[in-house]
Image (cartoon, rainbow, N blue to C red; front, side, top):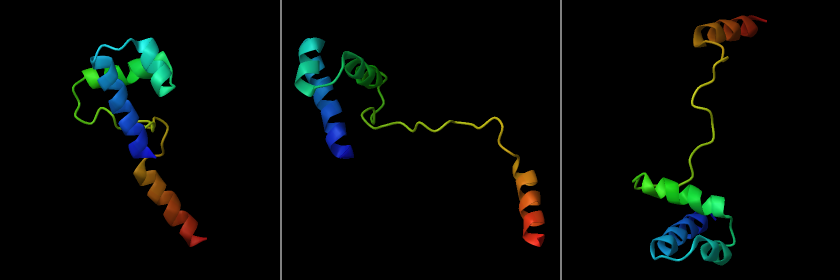
Length: 80
């Protein structure tokens, strides 16, 4: 399934670069203009893996318990 979606993204960009109108591309692939522009924007950044999905996980967790405290809590819990 993942490969199928990646091929669709590549096909979309090829169609766009060949000069097809975005409206026509949307009809061909069955997806929205926003979707087409999202992947075109990623393509333009020059990343070789532009067609891959990015993680949606947060880069940091501001309220995460520090590792030292986490380990102290674990050791206390193991005692009981």
